[in-house]
Length: 192
Image (cartoon, rainbow, N blue to C red; front, side):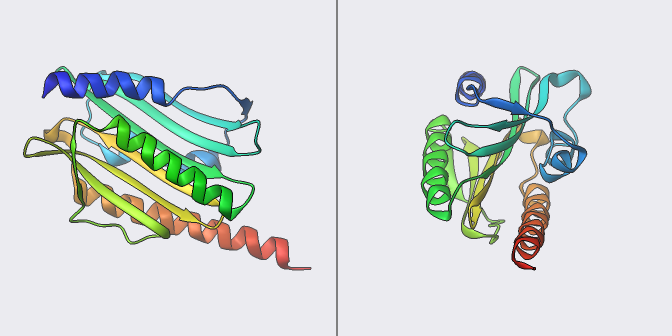
């Protein structure tokens, strides 16, 4: 299991990198994305290798707000990646979300994925999968779409640090927060 998780941690580094125009990250941006402190509160401080918030605009008009945490505990990787993408249209969001789900599925191809017992019914086309190494739950893969915006989270941790029910509760609350923000933005655009 150690080699599988180590390989996944290395693959995640490559999958989550790229180039785009950087934008400033605000405190409000930081509150939108779940962090390691929320999803894996028992992750030891000494496990941190890198932790960053990043906000970018891509050449095709897609805006991405992302949080990435990489660490290790007892030789096993800890990964949290959460992102909100704003696409130019709902059709672009459908395509982008599908491509992102496929990328994430390929990233975790060596782990068994099952529909989560704590399925998170939030947003259009919401998908929740628990990740297992052998019989041990080691992570969560979640994505949803709300209009032209998508929200996705990858979480990978040693089994003794991962709590699927806690993660599901946090993500459901965060999706609700994002939906409320979208409604407020939509109302401000349509109100004269």
